[in-house]
Amino acid sequence: METISAEIFTLTYGSMVRQLIADYEDVEEVNKQLDKMGFSIGQRLIDEFLAKSKTQRCSDFREAAEKVAKVGFRMFLNTTAAVTNWNAEGTECSLILEDNPLTDFVELPEALSQLKYSNLLCGVIRGALEMVNMDVECTFVRDVLQGDDVYEMRLKLLSSSPETYPFKDDD
Amino acid sequence: MPPGGKGRECSESCLDFLTLQLVQHYRSQLQGPSQQAALDAVGERVGRQLAERYSRDRPPLTEALEVMKWLCKEFWGEVFRKGVDNLRTNHRGTFVLRDTQFRWLARLSQNQMPAQMGQPLPAPIPKNELAADYLILPCAIVRGALSQLGLECNVTADATSLPQVDFTVVLASA
Image 1 (cartoon, one colour):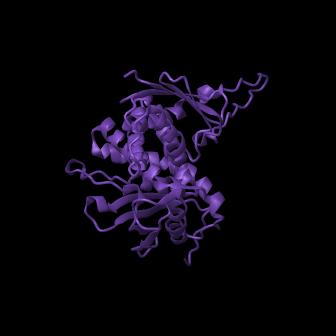
Image 2 (cartoon, chains in turn blue, orange):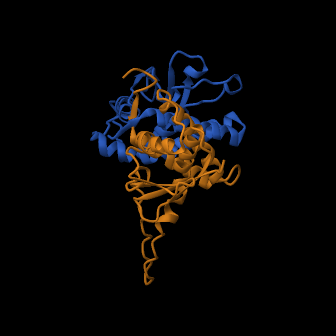
Image 3 (cartoon, one colour):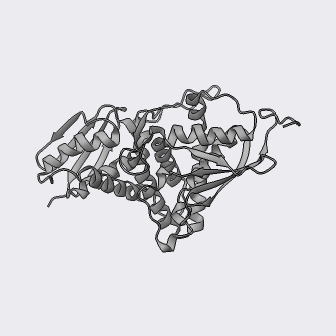
């Protein structure tokens, strides 16, 4: 992968978020737009991910989540996420980011405490996984900008299409 | 890699995806600011912030020509991955910066629409028209950077012969 100084990316993202806040004047709507924009990005980004990561087909959601966290974040953002807090069915987990390049130089003013600043990431993950036939829900549940100690995204598998993603009964 | 701050890297495609999406988002917005106004504002802020960062550790630039040279070499190198290939000026406040391989538009493809049965192939969209939306942001970044260094100006770009792009900077008469 060609790399660039993340500063440019981070500042462009920040400037975009600021613009969205000015456009919508409603934090909830900004959160929604960020997720939506991320979704479109994810749909495109998956192509590059599959082409460049030379990854094999994932056998289940667990493996897919690991790939997102370990390969995806490394490839694009040069950071990694930890996958934890699985539910018993193996359909829900958390991605924990200790280091989030999007939020370098960022502090949230009081008035924007409900802003999910990095919400684009959730959209990207949702968009990318949708292209490999996994419908997921992805939301930030912890955010350093809102005073938590790490970033945590909750990832929940809603459905997956059986042709390309076979579930075995004994899994 | 130390978390945060200088030296951190990310993939180039992150920025590509983001800028593409920005253009697309504001192209499809029916309410709010126009695409031009929104991308201008986004780019100008980025240009200002980057110029501030990149010029922090150097002595101040006083002459307009000095500033332009710094922009073409240092700033362009950082933001657009290589220096400007050619800088011309009429010495009356107009500068033309030629980048023969403008990185941000290098992959813009002049894809033709598929031909309809029995219809002649539609003419490809002229390069300049195709590139117009994608040049708003880089122009605004350049304008922001120059204004941060004290040069108020107007920046336009001509992409008639992509991947070559000519940026024309016209300084506001002092």
